[in-house]
Image 1 (cartoon, helix red, strand yellow):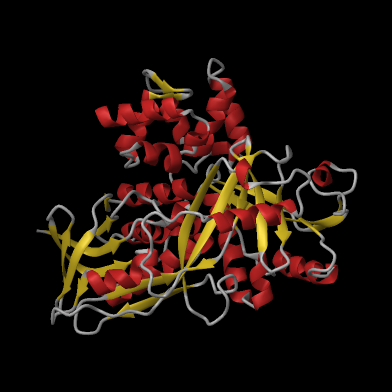
Image 2: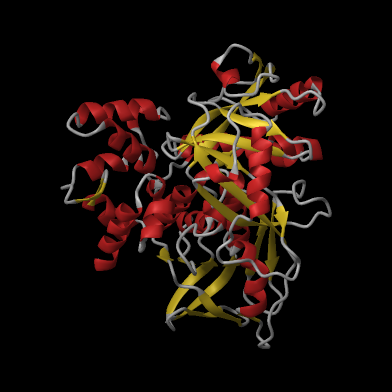
Length: 494
């Protein structure tokens, strides 16, 4: 039986981040994920690294400041996966007054130190490319900075770094039973493997309460209880490109919510999100899906602003995820996105439950969680991720300038299509240079060669076409069904 210091259940962003941090402190770590990495909530975000401008309205200044500090750190840690993005907020008469928006943006600019991103400013939209994409009644607005992220690849990068620091990372391998004793946990994994661990971390996201109830047992054999989470579905749609510039939009809706319209994959516009609270008695769906009502809502609200209306018939792809939120008594859209780390040492070995959280603050959550677990294990080892780069994040002399790194790749590989080099740089960062040094092999689908598929299978835990086409990349948006099937055949044969 293998022995570990900590077993982390759950391979979303929080679980992968926690496993990475723990492994970097020298703990013996096992990360066990029931599905693929980032298979659910962590690949179904709005793809933003942001402070959360709208959280200022609910007086969550601490959360916004924490997220803004993390935004700066993450932009440096993974410049290939996270890039600056400017947002245009058209002023809509009758909704939030201009003075309130100016005040909010002033706070947003100054709640945390900002070195990489420019501040906010007012805009005249009439007669500009930014205004041309909007209905003519929107004549002025504001602009501010945040970041865009490839969410699923961020999870993979954390898992890769955990493995590089000697963690064992298992996908499609759930913790099927965890039984507590005074000194350790006895755990059974899918397939029957048994391991022992001094501590257990429950980072199963929307399934955290269910995991405690169904898989975790105390020394007396009874299931452990846990706090209830609010499960809120967020859905997004992708349509053909609605504007050609590189800015994103944030729209105010009459119901008080906001909507993002983001340039996506060069040819598309990503629109989201919704906040649909699931009934308290419902279990988290393994495959959340957008409803017709959500699609209609996103189309209607986007069409209030965009010059080219959006209809359900325009939707090329959609996705949905279930967010586990702490219950603070408010509406689903105003419920806090902050996290809670709850230690449980009742009757035996330590258990750390991760409740809530948001993508932007995952690193800080992992740091706090690893520190807490270390203290529970009797060894307060120092934090280390504050200035650490993620795999692929070392762009050498280019620092955080991905454009300069892409130009260098193009100079070194003039025989390669520029679009391919740009895609590889965004996906793999500095690892792209290593990929290009390998024999390409056959081209399985346009721009996707055997060398990349081998890398994804051997180093990134990809097992299916869905893993490759919709999480490790978004090539599924660009490929025909026949091309997608060719990728599936290659992986099946392997």
